[in-house]
Length: 359
Image 1 (cartoon, rainbow, N blue to C red):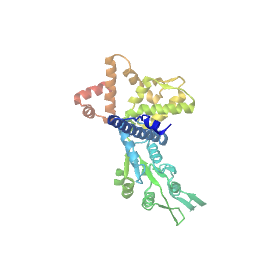
Image 2: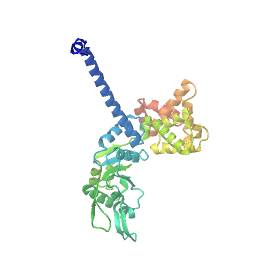
Image 3: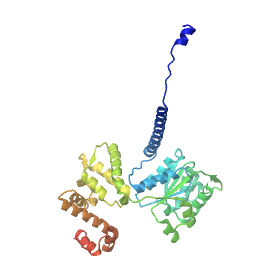
């Protein structure tokens, strides 16, 4: 092609309007924001799924989860409180798994099961334990937690002389084995748990106040299961799936059984629920777990559940009202307390308690 031919060839230009450019930029920003949002959501779901086995829907546990996320990577001591069986160990493990110490050890010590005479050597270790008549070397539980997390469950069970040594450990982050004058520097995260009221223990002289204030940097209180009923069914389904895999079964819950789980008070909290589901999976031969399979200690409450889910509207309303009155009376023990909670007069409360509780 000659120069003249090239110069005569028409040149085509692709033109893009400013509106199109603005639209593309807007779409790009929206896509970028969506990707960022999805990335954050996926990261959180992966954290929940892989780092912990926690299952919850209730608002109190959502707030607790946020607190755990905000404090997992700090060095602050954590005090976990709550009734027996609410899942304090699970919370401690979750915090460890979410932290930058997740690759390190998680050392759990139940202070309630340690024999007082051996407690000090178990925690701090020894070079030679003359009291036990042994020689050699034992690394204590505290030293094993180096570069990881030390979880002391039932911290309120520690005797005062061990509390004193624990206070020194927290302040200096060094440990001295028994019969050995050398001190070993440690780097660990301390989490403790109790079902006791440590403030009352301090007032009674059973727990050192200085140790309490050292431990009570971040307080995580786990509500009892009866106060977060939204978590009951998700937990029950999680336990069912796990135990069905473990025992090679394929079972489901009946609506009546689920109704019972939601209405029961669970004095033993999550641990009691877990034990009931495991027992049901083991003993039930039918494909459906129903209230008829409940152990004797639960069966007395099952008829009320069945009655509340069958019959006419008036019968169901009456059964439901009975559950409300009985539940309130169990908590307060007086008609005045029932009246105050339910917003009714005391004579009305007395009449309903007489009908549903004392009849």
